[in-house]
Length: 245
Image 1 (spheres, rainbow, N blue to C red):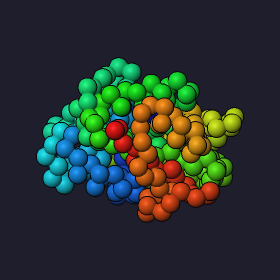
Image 2 (image 1 turned 120 degrees about the vertical axis):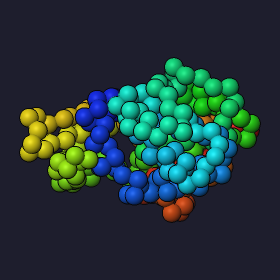
Image 3 (image 1 turned 30 degrees about the vertical axis):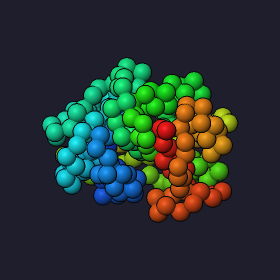
């Protein structure tokens, strides 16, 4: 569920240096959920940071990472005691095999149309055993985070090979709850920049609740930030734990 630009190994190699485990509050939130579940499906697992962390912490059950970007999975596969699968929810199916499914890194927001969301939720519902939980987050549209992406001056980070890389985001269009933007990576030692164009949907809480209800999920908890504070008008996140009855 990551940007398909990450299918390219050169770009995929930039993800962990930019979005490393140590800086990610979302992974710290999800790790206890993973550790308490016997069988876990990570949808849009990227480089596998969450599942690798769980295994390193002592998880002894089944861990499965699913991602459509080959470059990201090549990095994930440096750890072989996790099942890594190239694909997405439209190409792979499971039959009530997991007690927990997660989507981290705002991967749920790449599902744009209602029909796409319904299809994904149906596939996740089918993958979960009775009583299983789907845990994920979306950015709260009321906080309008995209307005800060372009105004910020970018981020410099050091790639795995020691190269200093600059990362910048430019929002190109906002239409209703759809935001289009371009991510650009540049370095003084590269011949050209690397760019990717992305689209995200910023779902309102009411719309999200209706879609989950229609897919047969029951929302157990929702939080407005990674400290488990309640959802408020200007909360940055809508973090949802939804159970399959």
